[in-house]
Length: 79
Image (cartoon, rainbow, N blue to C red):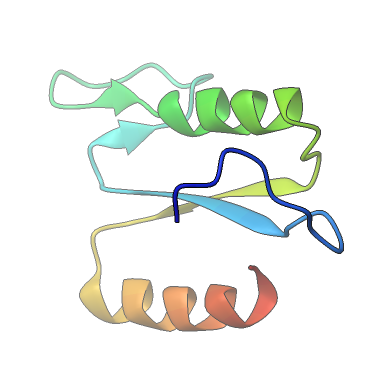
């Protein structure tokens, strides 16, 4: 749109979604084929800097039907 600032009626409801069986929680020790799921926390922190305090984190495993169902559900609850 080419707009740097927008007027909004309210704070958007945001879901930060990570996917993949190779990602583990930051508190867990990854196996040789895994990495820590840290990007979602970085995105959540960046959103907080923009005064968006309600960004929820979700992680979905590599399961096509589950991803489809969860995305369908989340799209109804988030902007």
